[in-house]
Length: 148
Image (cartoon, rainbow, N blue to C red; front, top):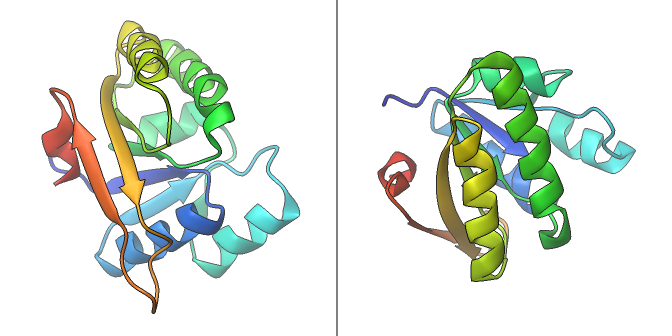
């Protein structure tokens, strides 16, 4: 699979910085800012991440979704994305990059896979990309090669 468009959900402190790096690498980077805070909107704008107003359109246009948000929102986000996958029939890869428990990862795998998506269990070690260093992404599962 050739990845051209990457969605960052959500472009907060880490997400917008990752988005900037991806944009610099030639990727089209998108997000859905519906219901997000003014601060998140400002960070996305600063990073030049393109806003797609709803999840259905986002999953249609995206090859890879990176879920980068607070861990307690990982399951609700996966459920929202899975609903959009079901409504659209789209099948982007979905990488949960949050610090979550193994059982939570298995649950998200079922949510995304049952909706037709391809799940990647990923983690980010280190702070946001910038002058102080670069974080490392670690991934596992049958679709981990999509993050390389």
